[in-house]
Length: 601
Ligand code: ADP
Ligand code: MG
Image (cartoon, rainbow, N blue to C red; front, side, top):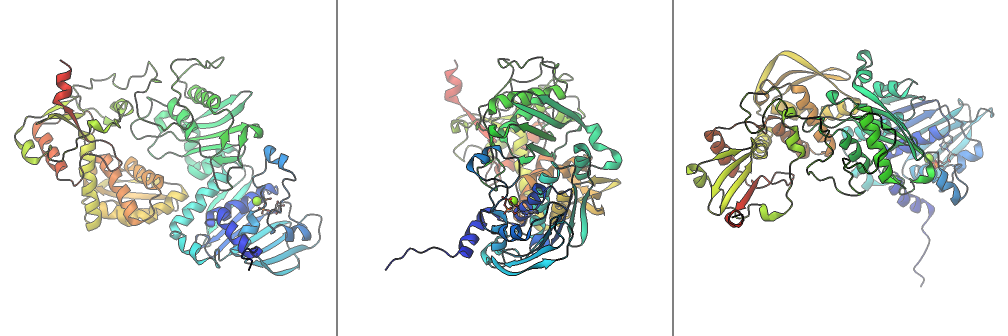
């Protein structure tokens, strides 16, 4: 008996749908991109239950003829390319003709559409690839697609969806990626009957401001500088944050030819341009738009991928680096690009960003000019800014030879009686039977505090201190969603926070450990961590909250410690189940062996 048979279309479509439509956010992306491809000037997104029950996109674009409306839902039906050749000169967002076929395979879709030249429109209803209704209808010019009960026929996928909060955040993230490149299009985003974002048509700046800033205070205009470079290979425009306005929570966006992209290598270029200018943990915010000949990039890797390959990444790296530096006023306008400049640190594409001594530091910039690192006896105002240099020049020693292996070396008994020294405001030196142990004081303290905070979160008993003057934390809509999710845990650790308006929280009390630190950067750091790590379960985000709180409250580099303080720190460290490395694998305790020391003489 023959055993091979063709799958029915509906099954094949369902399988393929898994590739393109993974969650409500990917469905939203496809629908909105179609509207944009159809030349819409006004796009409304209506969502219910984070897209689980309803995802609706209404546009005023070209609309479709009766025939096209029906064809649109067939696999590989597209009006955007005709031959393989066209793939290399893509300017539209979609081109595979897979999205609608995929969506209607896993949802109940109702669409009305009309072209300007037609008197009547077409109504089409499709349930799991089956057309259940098609008839003429009265409707405005444009297209209105309603996707209901996504994954109704794929229970596994439905189960795989995350909490509503997370899916809504994903929807908004996807939405941002699009609205930031189409400032001339009017967008509205409605969730459960509430208008979440209303974005009138305007300039790029106004759009960014409308999404991330507070238009009333003009935050954006004063906090950012323009980037602008035209070369034969690429044109780069956009905005980068002034170093003094950088925060711990950065908004970092690259776009190429009207498409959002991630690009670790180009990110490195921007970071390099800022080297030596930002405090520890701070990241530059930027919105950078590349315009490049479509033939020099390859977007056809995967429909859901946001990574894009460029033909000449190293040259673009240099151009980008120079452009951002110029914008930051760090260097005079370069008349020509000097590719042999010795001071440009340029990793190769694909190279992992490793911490190592920076060679691209502005020679005139000295974060330590006000004081000595070795004798930090006068209390500085801002530790982190004074010691930022230390962080960037920190050696990560991957070689495990330097790591302390035998657990019995750093024993509470040993610590009790030996002398301890502090070196460089950074390390505690501990004599041990086999050599000298070096303990990174900041990392040690972070590890100790992290475990304390995790415990506090479990017991819900963070100590609180009321603020004399409440502070206001303004946030973007996606962070508001995240905030709601982690709020009970922020309360548990000692924050007293209440929602003040649709886009702000008022902070009335802080964990007592924060003492007189401003709570805003600390909260921004927490949000950035939770977001970055994609912490999705309570345990995951609690770990991020604990880690972030620990980093904010640990003794900084440069702080002089008394012998008692050092001893106390080491004792607490040895009580941790895992004290030799941090949670993210960095070395806390390192041994310089007798042998190594003797070899030097
Ligand atoms: P693709 O966008 O890759 O061509 P889709 O499955 O997303 O494939 O859409 C199929 C076709 O349906 C498009 O090529 C376009 O002609 C038509 N279409 C889809 N959405 C719209 C819309 N909102 N307005 C006008 N035409 C649309
Ligand atoms: Mg499409």
